Image (tube, rainbow, N blue to C red; front, side, top):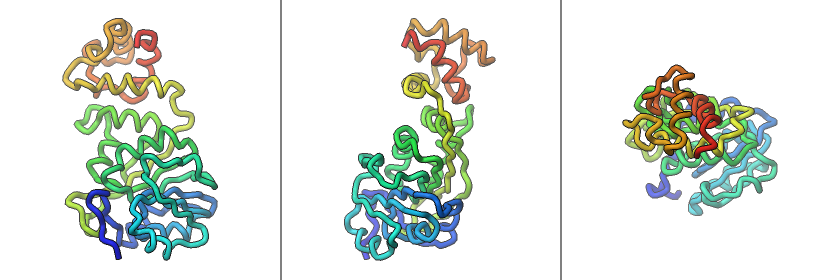
Length: 254
């Protein structure tokens, strides 16, 4: 049996109760995307619930174990999750259910929300610290550009704190089960809002307007006042939807 690889962020799930929590909500009609199935412990639970499971795995050493567990309704795909062609999956997945590799969870979740439009929900495990950055509320230390972008595209909740002992090998940190439901419709201006959000949080200690190009600052101040934040507001004071309002007012100057 292949050992977990630290360089791939592998911590294989071994606890059936945790697997049931992650797999809860999968229905017979669902087509599930599982990223990082490893040896297939969670996959076995998904095959019993879903119409079809697409398991995307980068580690060739675990594929024989995964194949032994996979049923007729499982398609195994070898590939890097951050470079994989999700549009080519047939049938197209409508849910992500996964124990995500630690080293790709943050960029992968945002990429899936941005690019795989057919995913209505995402339910996965990630490091607790990462989960908190996804679900952070404005004004908290974990709230940043990443939280804003994720929350513009999905409603986010942390459902369950997960002990290191349910994994092999046990990580040094706690994990969490995260649930996301895609917002439909999402903001039509998202592609334009994203660089604005990244710029706004570039220097957190600065006033938000000082992180924007000079031509945008006067209009930005007016918007901040209209949103009851004040001219000197910092980026972490704004809700995700406030950035959409701000972009609509200053997009001409960006």
